[in-house]
Length: 283
Image (cartoon, rainbow, N blue to C red; front, top):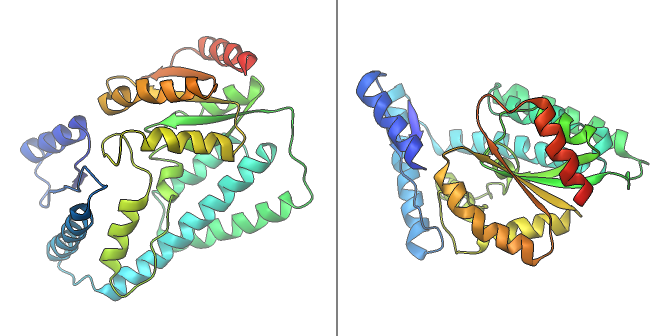
């Protein structure tokens, strides 16, 4: 069992597993928290190299640089295909529903990678052909979703029925998953570390006080969005701490914002429908 060292909840979940559920191999992957320092890159590379050796030892295999290069190529192909689909969704939301794209992203985190890479590439080619000659639907109110993750695909059709279209997101289980590809080079571990340093951070990491707010503002402008919906998981402290500063930046830029606190189960469909309709009337 491998746990990332992120927020307190995940760290303590790791402790619970380690103390109560013997799994044979248990590892906490402790990546640097502050990413905009010269030492962060060296530390990140060292941690990942140790991780490579620890996993290989636990599995009884020698994970070579060639193995990593092959895996990097596969993951780069997967991420590029997902990004292509996101771009099509941004330009022509009526061609690809939010729930369908959500399903593709979830599948990309669970399926066999080699099989998935081919399927996603084929899907991207078909969607590009379908998009050829299409015209954007100017009547749709373009929305960006922001948060940690979205485990409720029912949210997408509710927004769409209210006249909105999710044209991009800033989720760990969404756009942040495919942000940045691993660059080629002789040292694959250093390449992976460089990608993790460069990509947009989640609130559990830090790379400047306003970096994430600037990133969300850039997404709004790049994708011509008219509003932002924050999906905030109840008791998620890092995102809750981030929200006031990000909200201030959105307000100063004149971007309408809706904060939706999430928990399981979701509020009733009628309640969500009313909130989405009221928000979309504003934008």
